[in-house]
Amino acid sequence: ARHYGGGEGSSTSSGGAREVGMIPAMGCGTAVFTDIGPNQRNLSHEHAREIIPWAVDAGYRLIDTAYMYYNQPEIGLELKSIFGSGELKRQDLFI
Figure (cartoon, rainbow, N blue to C red):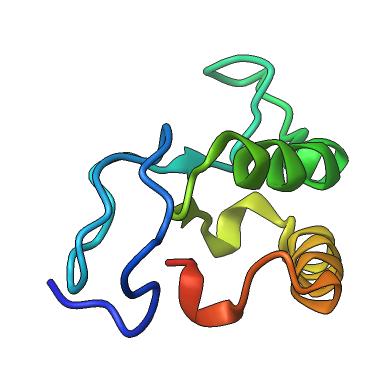
C-alpha cells in the first residue's frame, strides 16, 4: 500500500521501518476493553488522550482506531494538539 508523506528522514522508531511509500508494519491500537464477554466495558475514550501522545513519542506512525471504540473526539483533540505544535504533520501519520 502507498502513503502520502513522511519522506526522507522520517522516524524509524518502534512503529516499524519507514520507507517512502510504505505503511508501517506496526501500529498503536486505541481500543481499551476491560474484559471479553458480557461484562466487557469499553474504556477507550478514557485512555485515548494518554495513548496518542505516548504512541507519537514512542515513534509510532500508524494509529489504529475504529468507530466502535467511541474515542474519536479524544483522539482528534490529541492529534490537533500534536499537529498544532509542529511536532508532526497530518501526512506523517496513518490513521
